[in-house]
Length: 308
Image (cartoon, rainbow, N blue to C red):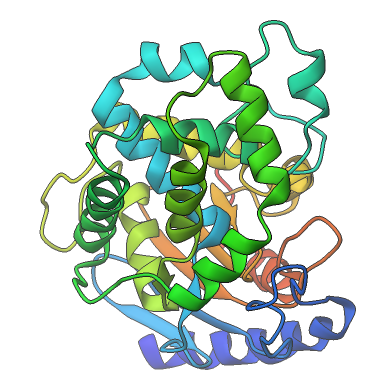
């Protein structure tokens, strides 16, 4: 049965690859601009097996996928009341890096943790006396979720993003003015760019998805990594805000909690069934993997994955 599923997955990947020509790599971050837009790979992890297609060992950076993991850690550190006093819970139809809602909302706080402003505020909440300690704690959670202690971050990508993070600096200074964040902005930007530059492969990502799929429990060991209610909060944000301002369409067509990143990664957690890790760096105009979304759409229809 596994062989048959693997063969079908390979077929789906080949079909979805045809759509890579419609996308572009994220060349506004120089280090990401060198990706091969025709790459497409996927790993699907459940309690019993992992099936995959494509080069699942190829590493890529989490980018915005890291927002979900940072949110889980901040909630564990600070609690819901503290976090959501400073960051909202509502979806937005604006681009992920928009500043406009910060200027027009009262109080002036980010609408949700999945847009850049909200993610910066959340990262600022992670406990630690130094940015190194905060990053170490975030990496420790990633190590726990993936069962892979070799995971670190790409210094090249982190430096490339740090040098070009002018808009994120603006968002951060605006929020500091309004009391949403505190501390040194350059230290926050340094931490945030390293967070986004954490490197994984599709198998690692599928294991992270599996932990969320099983409500914060490692399905292989039965060990609880994230509290149940926090895991559910994270999955809810993945449904409502995880695919930027294409989240509504994604929910209708595919119907599973997911979070994308501009490196081309997509993390998906199918409740009580599987975690999915996908990499396809050719992006659509919303910043989501073109071929990745087509692949997930085919899988959702074939295996009835939608939770709705």
